[in-house]
Length: 480
Length: 92
Image 1 (cartoon, rainbow over the protein chains, first blue to last red):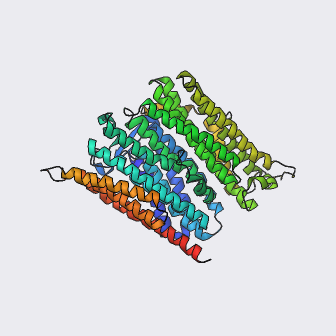
Image 2: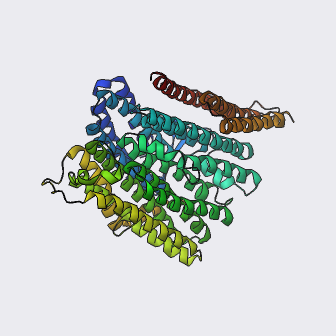
């Protein structure tokens, strides 16, 4: 059973190597590897569903010397979301790139990124997290610069440098941890950890590095240009998955490993930064002139929402309510991942069809593509948090917990953010519906439109109306 | 005492690198600064590997080796992208 964990990392990696070795068949091999990876991830999820958590020691070497992989409810849920988004992005990319060259360069990097992401979600020690984090940053920057335009290269070079700064800071934190505890294994560490200056410094350093990578306000400055200038399938993956991966690590450290070190004021500070991110990100999204820039700023805001959960999780005592809040946090992350992927893919189609993505001039263009416009609307529903989307449930539980733990002020932030989100989504939609006659066929280019639509639809319908299994998946995980 | 000296030097190197990264604009200086930050961390890791009479702890050494590989590849990618930018702006 444990072989599934190693396969989840190695299948996309082997696919990427094959795509590098046989560039002419890159697309076919890439799609094949994508399907295989989705199947393996399904296997991992089934294992977690049945057993609560999985653990594998590579080569039979046990911690603290060996490299271990582990999966619990949280990582399984994110693995599943990543697999869905990655499959959608892969199918979309196979119909998106016009030049064979771009297509050939896309697949090896893309599969390597997926392997790094799976490795990061499954890593069970701090140093392997560093390695996968670096791999993720390198592949993400290379993919983002794939178009080769000066803007894209400049934005992604900055992203790369910022990412390196983040991982160096994280690595210094790791070195401090090893200095005082002599282990890097997450499980051993959470038992050994005691509140103290060294542990606190290490947590601050690691969090600062990860916040830089997760684009947490005010360290978000690099995100909008990098994500808005990347090719559409890449921006979808960057916004939905790569940023989320860094946030997953913050979550893992704050709720799991370093839980004894976290004080209410530290969690409150994270919530405060989250609140500023929600308001600033939503405001900039409303003022954005281009559709992809709007989507990128909305990502900044959505990361902010996720941080709002931290002070509440800190305040609530362990129990059913806290578990609910934790599932709501994961539900928000999953919903945003799927919705933002759908939105970026749809924005790429609009941009391709119109030749630009200036929101004010979108007019009839969007109306020529009913399925794409519908995708934008559905993704918007999830970003605002309207029922029946997953983020409606998430925000509902978030606000209930804010009231119950007496931290009512977060509700104001959520309300402002939601209103701004509604404003920026409807601003796009109002441009999309004008007087032009609507074409007869709903779908105009199935290969690219359908994956985008399905991702957005999943975020609204599946995660909202059928979120129940997530409780079981995460409840079974026990963990944080 | 020696351990503290080496480890402390590592932390100082990290701080110097961070300062240079934030202050200087040119890509090359930023990259060198990042590499100095990396060297600072590696310094610290090598310092904590010392265990007195016992042979040194191999784990930090392995970490440093991996870290060097990562730093080299990251530097190479950044240089390639910087080169591309320079070619593009020089060609006009």
